[in-house]
Image 1 (cartoon, rainbow, N blue to C red):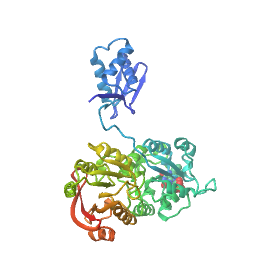
Image 2: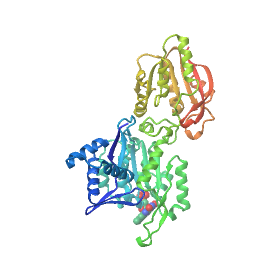
Image 3: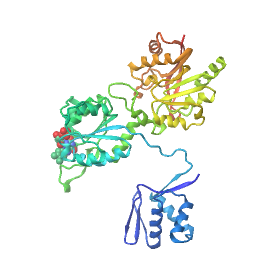
Length: 492
Ligand SMILES: Cc1cc2nc3c(=O)[nH]c(=O)nc-3n(C[C@H](O)[C@H](O)[C@H](O)COP(=O)(O)O)c2cc1C
């Protein structure tokens, strides 16, 4: 593997006169003087472009008009630069290069809490995460932070009123509510929290938060005395009970006191970097839209596939027991390759496993990130990958088998019957749907529909015949399992 050296984006370096100082991320400063400082300056400058060690030595030799000797001087310096986080190492052969995360459409609601002075910082970080950001502000928020700076950052008008400047189109709060994949109210003042909890839509931030069906993250931020007041506690609890995601406040500085008197106290929202880290974790758990258990048909589904596999409860290293062997039996009984649709294929584990036993597999998923993972699997070239919605996509011809592992149980109830009809329509006569869905014993917090045999029989009534049911330990990350059942539903 070829190591590549690069000046780290967050390198902490400063210079004073001839000396160069490397600030260690965990504290402490390393000082270089004279020739050492000059060499460090040159190396850091050359490593603004990614280079191998050999390429770096060649570039240094060109710079000084001959080989740098002894080479150990440069190697020692590189070790120090790596140790202090000024230089980072990656690999040219690494298959998994960091992939661009496709972000979400985020509406940021800003209120008149003092932490809104950090809004430009928060907006910058959200944009860096790859999100598309629109900002809505209460009148009091405008006292702490002006909209012009935020407009310069986002390249979009900041919405500060329920009343649109132009008469055409939906009102601003409805437009933003429908546009959002995710809404974030940060900082959330006690007043805005009370408005949302009470259903009061008399300003733009509360109106969007109440109107949107996207998940809403609320970050209360206020003086501890306000935070602990029963009325505020009741309102925060009401938000949580209504399906809003509430981020706990941390310890910060209370501005009501004069600077000299200030002490750190609980109540303020986390700093923007901490908040963005929390948001990343929230997105990784793909919150359902408020008021329904649904598979988001939007970017938040895709964003889950940009996160570590361990954050996806349905992702495993091996197919569920008995699935591939069942297809092997059906294949040898048919005496011909089976045409299989893997509906909601995710990162393609089942699709590639079925292709490996000779099935002719078409794999469809909403998420481009998931399909990228599927295409990177060994044997992926034998699968036809389709990005789209299995409920509506058009396929050339019908299938001997449709494999649904964990698709039906993430659909909202009205769509489950639509999917049953669609799956039946996609099957050839005598073909079958192989459905794996969570059972009543699956943990409720997964947010899936926990189905029993009767519910499945009702869903497919008049469409497919229930041929067999068996309990399955549905495999998840790191050896975890979730209680499920595998149903084979055959077409007459
Ligand atoms: C200097 C100053 C700082 C304030 N900081 C906060 C705060 O951190 N949290 C809070 O809930 N209210 C805070 N307030 C009070 C709010 O601005 C006030 O309750 C306002 O009604 C909030 O309205 P809004 O939610 O519509 O923005 C502060 C007020 C002032 C004058």
